[in-house]
Image 1 (tube, rainbow over the protein chains, first blue to last red):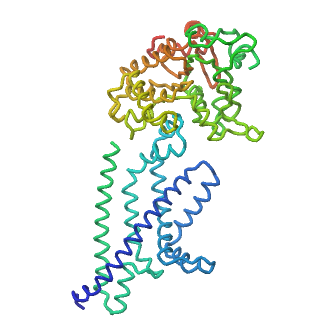
Image 2 (image 1 turned 120 degrees about the vertical axis):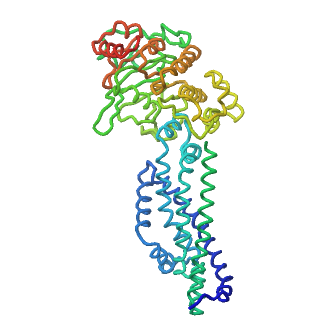
Image 3 (image 1 turned 45 degrees about the vertical axis):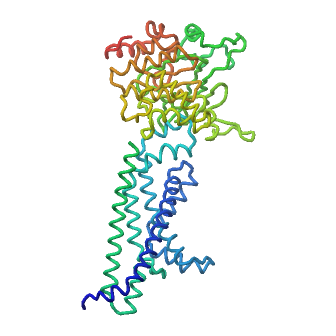
Length: 219
Length: 299
């Protein structure tokens, strides 16, 4: 079997559609994973037991089970209980929640790296817990976390092919559809790999730039 | 307060009643509305305060009180509980027994629907408004400029507008001699300069009580003087109540109108510096001072 440029060109538009879906899902899930992950981390740092314990239990549960199982749960099991999610919604929630448990560990480590003296100074200057987080702790904790968080975003991006299991036509989904229809796998799968490689490399570069800029801003 | 003496916890520690130091020195700073039958409310009162970590007890039934405007030096060997006292007052630690009163109001307890309960965060925030603290390791906010370090809290706690806070910050930076560093980040300052910024930051909230926790211990010797001179000015120019935990005996002697000598969480000696440093009642105090002198300090 030899490479056919004609076939590659023919399926390219469909694959680009898939790539757009992949990037969109990654971006939305990333925001979800970051926001929820930060909330998890703050809850895990809480002194209140009934806040800390349920969150610890939930995050451990999600982190220690496969994403594919969780996606099946959201998309195929929940409807039995009357909760109907579109493939995209289920995919974003599944991917976002799963990675929120990982990002929450990054956030937790970053928060713990801020010296205790900073908390004490915030207390001594009578800042509210909210202001302590937003003005003292997070601005110091976030910049060193950027590389680790960025890596998780790229990992999520690379994990999106799994979403084709719940009928999302992402890059992989489109490629599989084309391949199955034409009985040719070489071009579709090669193009999928190339697509992922290009976007991953670009994202890594963006994260590097972002990190450098944040470090600069914080002296 | 039931007794006319403000030193309610000293029966065991000292047989002789002391005159209040503040009444003798720096009397201009002490309001004189007290009459012998109703002594004025102490600004700080410890009532049988206990603090322990698990099975380790650092303070046990500690009682003493401080009059408004007094300048207290807390001295004693490491681990004797001096710093813990300041940390309890700043609510960085929680009292495990007894009660602390600030200006007659309980710091660690509050009344809610007729019941006395552990103080909530909201109660603690109200009480902290009266208290400022300067730390051994400065604890400046490294991502904020010197000016922002000083203006941040007054603005965020909505006590001052941005403009007012800035004006006050410049006044305070002027007082500590650092107006030219206003836009620098803390990393660019010397230890002595950092500590002077930290003093300005604490003062920006206009506390009634200032807690100074070994503020020169982390400094190179040649930088100690610039910080102490700022404290001396504060002592002479304001009527703040000041509690100083220190290992600098000669400074404690100049600064304080009353000295408490601690050992193992107990007040062993309580009186004016002239007495504590020259003719202490207890052998333990003498041996502590001898050791300090042997280590090269002038007293």
